[in-house]
Image (cartoon, rainbow, N blue to C red):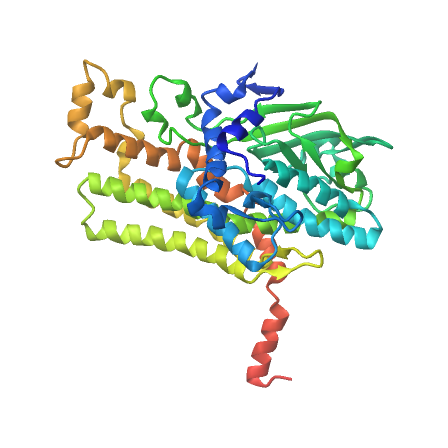
Amino acid sequence: MPLKTPEEYLESIKRPVNLYMFGEKVKEFWNHPIIKPSINTVMKIYELAQNEQYKDIMTTTSHLTGEIINRFTHIHQSTDDLIKKVKMQRLLGQHTACCFQRCVGFDAANALYSVTFEMDKKCGTNYHDRFKKYWIEVQNQDLMVDGAMTDTKGDRSKRPAEQPDPDAYLHIVDENDDGIVVRGAKVHQTGYLNSHRAIIMPTLALRPGEENYAVSFGIDTNAKGITMIYGRQSCDTRKIEEGKLDIGNFMFGGQEIFVVFEDVFVPKKNIFMKGEVEFSGELVNRFAGFHRQSYGGCKVGVGDVLIGATALIAEYNGADKASHVKDKLVEMTHLNETLYSCGIACSSLGFQRDAGNYEMDMLLANVCKQNVTRFPYEIGRLAEDLAGGIICTMPSELDMKSEEIGPLVEKYLSTCEGICAEDRYKVLRFIENLTMGVASVSYRTESMHGAGSPQAQRIMISRQANLEEKKKLVKKILKIE
């Protein structure tokens, strides 16, 4: 059975990489205190896939090999698969309270599966067979795959080919019978360092004359010519301080990487698009749809934990019986379950592509993500409201554990009888982490900008609103010819 254990995953990523953090090269990144929580998060995926209790959600049978595989390597074969994807993402959010980094490659693979099929049908290429062979390797080895779409974009008023620096968008700079050479950068790369491979995609719909930018391929994340720069996050250096309580979520965390491609060679067998500009927009749209569906699961799971932390701090403060506290917790739950409803709805209304795989309802997936750009902010605001201002004014863990002033901190952080001051401290720091600290990147900011910023969803919603059909409904009722 091609399922890695958490320990096997950890050993598999211990490889040389060209990684920088704070201006210095990082060796043995898997031991770095800032990076380890993000690795712990990925390990949780592999752990739950081994758990009999979660087998139905975390694993499935590959339609390519007939083997049991991790669901994160699956190509959706039914609406049930789409629904279970969302349920799996909520489960992992509940277990980690952060971004678990494996969704982007999952969504990229499902988008490429159908787009390569359609390219072959129209253009006479053989991308689909290439991709299937590539993905069978991923399934058989239970590899973690990143999906890399976002370019640095340079001057937003100019098209890729018009940029003063052509590297503002990743592009082909050379080609021979064996493959291509690419140059450029991909940013906001969630979990890239922790991934074995990456699927690279164009970042927007391209036009004739921009063929060198219409490129998609698979690559080892540590391939020659790739430089990684670790992204900063709020409060990240707390992880290298003495103690762990000030971190908030000291077990798990997310990861964002700035990835630079400097004349990276891609073998022909790993190329899934090369110059087909007419399919670039469709690949972007399908990937975005799958990824916007994902947010109806992952952000909901993290929201579950934040709601739980807010209810717990209300209890620790002795305020849990107040009617306004109960009402705010109801509102947080209402918003969170609305997001989940959108994720389940767009999955339930999924349909089958000509390639055989299933795709979510695009309109509802965009409605889902549009809500995600708003609701987590309100959920976070209510959490901050009920936690109180102390989440951003508390003394440090070292103060709490100081022989001189520790007793004072503990005395004045104490609330209800039987509530340990340190437990209250832990929950307050956890809420701070989710709303303002490292985890806020993968909860609030990622809710805004991940899978496209709000206007991207509004554009897609406007395209699919079908206003002419809605006008006809009115005319029919009012008998207007």
